[in-house]
Image (cartoon, rainbow, N blue to C red; front, side, top):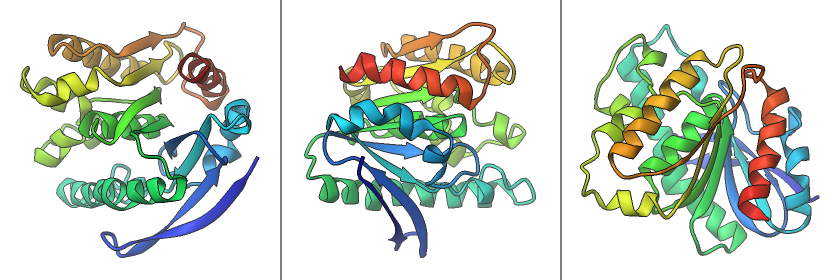
Length: 246
């Protein structure tokens, strides 16, 4: 399995961010790390290994990026508005700088896939819901979708943009994204075990909001023994990759 490690200079953020890339062909997938994570974490937690059957067959390529969570969602010592402005700049870096890089690097002309676990799942789902013109597939494992929960109830227009529950609820029923979202494969999964309470609550609310708008993601809720942990994400990811890529 081909692996490349490098960094990426963002003119929007005026800094370098790490990236790890796996695979030689197939659907390019933007991979977000879990909360406060870095681009090497996906391999470090064994997630690249469970993707190996699709990577080795040339069905999937992974582009793993750094997060800025420590300075945004996790930075409780900073003002919420400051944190959200930096997060929005990071989102602009992803969509305006890193996505074009993926297309150049892979020579892929279609829409991309994205995936993540925990807060990485939140980022992945948010990316597709905001930009279904750029992404056609997401696997989001144990994400939280009501982002006011991460900010002790604080909300503004930037929180709204990055909170899938709020942005879907506020989307006009005739928005062109509705049709585009229904052309996507949207997989939203969580368990009912330890540390999944908020993920389960917000996922059920997001599912209801989507249905009200005529959007129908695949919501898959696993059992009470399924915890918010890598052990389960290593089981869930190959299951969904098999459904989507085989």
